Length: 116
Length: 108
Image (cartoon, rainbow over all chains, first blue to last red):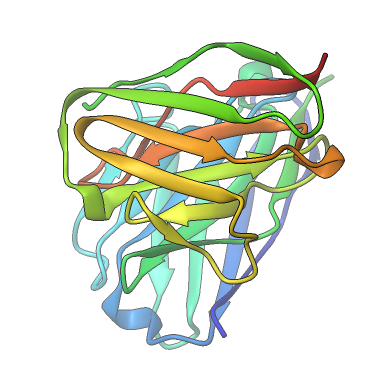
């Protein structure tokens, strides 16, 4: 069974940093692209970033490019999102997402709150 | 980037009625890369349909998906009380993955 478990969220001040993790199991992690998606309170779903299976290719939404860095450790079956220079508008639930055999799988999400 | 437009924004219906939700793409989407989700407050999105018409595991058969190209539809044949929620479509042809703005199905 595919499982994704996010962690690392919390309260951080504007300008601060946070690193999210997504632990994966139930599939061959090292062979799939993986995505981060976020959902601000009361709003819709927004794609944030993705990374290729080998970690060599990455892509970012304009709103986070230059501030967020996606990475992965295939030996640990773990995806990361390093978030720097955080802003109030980055407040959201962050989800990791993988497409396995054409079907999407999501984690349960981790809440990031940026506030002073 | 493929833009997905969902309509209507809000659908007011009674239990037992049929709900028809639309998702229109700004360019053609491979049917195998279109999904529908249900979301309730405080919960993660719940996958209903993937590949435009394949029901996810455990999803009741009152939920069905159809469509191709740029026009896709989620139909709930007879609304149950637990079906009142927000529904999103998603395309995953290639990055960036994009989502529609959502349709809220509310009790009339």
